[in-house]
Image 1 (spheres, helix red, strand yellow):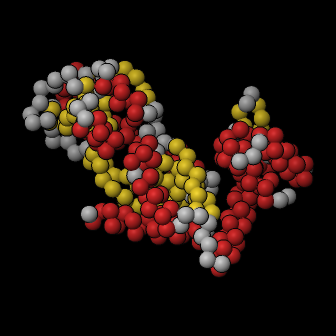
Image 2 (spheres, one colour):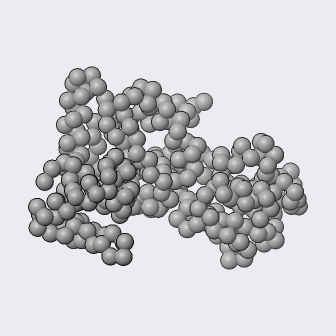
Image 3 (cartoon, one colour):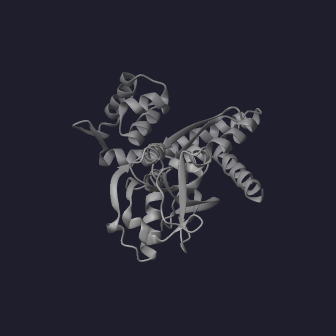
Length: 303
């Protein structure tokens, strides 16, 4: 058993896909497959169920995964300590991010961090808020940036920045309003484009409407979509309206591609969070990343 085999095993367990694991490790798929086969032969057990292209861990695989992650983390710590001693800070940081943070928050922070530590690389995976939590608790990802908060005592949430949801509409659609504020009853007259299940934006929209006794079953939902960019384009051409982060719609609004409204007497303020497992034993590099994040967003919030 060697480190390369364990890296291949953890990558396949992470993506449940040999091709994606190979791309992350900059290896060929046959090489990754060979690493897994050699590891299974050495351990005398099957690590993955391979049925109809659906890859899942066997019980032996689940046992190995927890230990493999610990071994690789210890290896990373050893390498980091040696490089730090010689004046180098290098390594890879794994991040899971939902749509809005991935596009509008994470890039600027990574740029700031990379300016200080150019030897650090990042692996950023796009997950909805719920799946990001799952990957962090499984130990496959170290950190996450998400747009919703769930009750989970194993997850640490750090408030980053505030935003709000607004109702975006086509330029040509006029809704009875009072200085940009509409009655909640107007929603029953509109066609909606909504994010798919698991989206922080969707969860927050439905939760707030439910709090105000609005029956979401009355919404005429034309389509469920994964991408905010797709939603904006669909609304722009008149297919419907949508609740969306103002942060993500700002460019369209300022360029007169969309209009937006707020709902009277309802607060659609939202926060974006940085998350990690409370049980996670951070490497020195991860601690430096975490400390830099605290510093960066404290400065950002004071501006």
